[in-house]
Image (tube, rainbow, N blue to C red; front, side):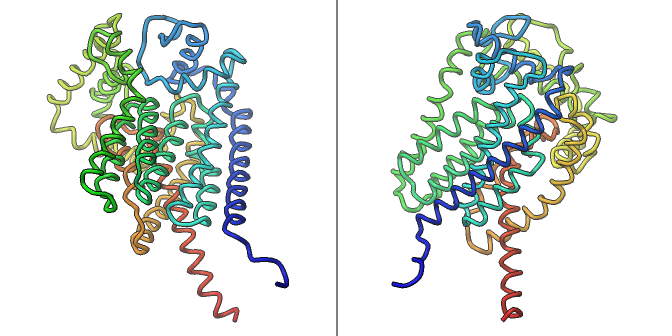
Length: 428
């Protein structure tokens, strides 16, 4: 045989993996530069990052999951974000700017870039995977969380892993793939409590629609996935059930979330559809976080019942905020108190306005290609329901950004193929 041998499938796979690694490195460099030049100087604000970093310090000191500074057992947030910050905190301690802790998030954000590219390859093709990885590396709404010590970077990573496991399961349903999907759902729940709904929105439907297995086998796979997810979260849930006075599973933060979103300040005026710290503390305090959360839940539900006529307007504003359709630049200004520079948020809004229409086109393209697309819709459904029931804030949209990037990559790939097909006859 003369000439070079044709490229093999393995060679193509190696090139694809090498490309993903290279793009992930570029994404890491971008995130590191962002940390070193922008967010490392954010040392004045008091928000959730203070809790995560402080709790990592308590864990390193051997105090367990305690409220930073004031002490006392805590489950304000699920534990995984603080846990992943333990190595950096143990090695470098906690200093002004919390650079080592932010670098941890930057690394995890770069890992998410590679996983999103892999997801694009599994959904459609390697070229879509490369495009998705490039978008994930450059998209502001994916690199902004990597400069903040909060749960959004992990939420992005686990959402991408869950979607990847879902497509793998749909192609080859097995006990192993069901187990992996259950593990992903469990880890996501330990990152943000609302991500536990991925069990109902993704895991169960994926098993139910599987046609290559009998009904009995599908029931077994569904039970396995749910049990595995339960086993993953069980140490944290058991700890909370035996620790607090009121029944507590993943978090005691739901009370403050609801009360801060359901009061006069967020039902009227400039903060419509947003959240108020002052409202969230408008109940008698308690040394037991679960008791305080129960009081906040009761006050929030009471307010909602008393203002049902106003609730549709508030819900519309919440959903509008999370999708940058209602007061987006005001929401960006509000978000700076949580470590998101206003200029970066503006860049995120502009990029979202470009990618969102492309994502809609990508959704249509997948339908015309008769490819499975419903898993990519579920994060969008989840964050919309979250906003409707809680409040609208850009960072709550983090899981859906994964779907937006992949669907936008599908549209760009389809556009490239269409342009190439039209150009080829002219070139000939």
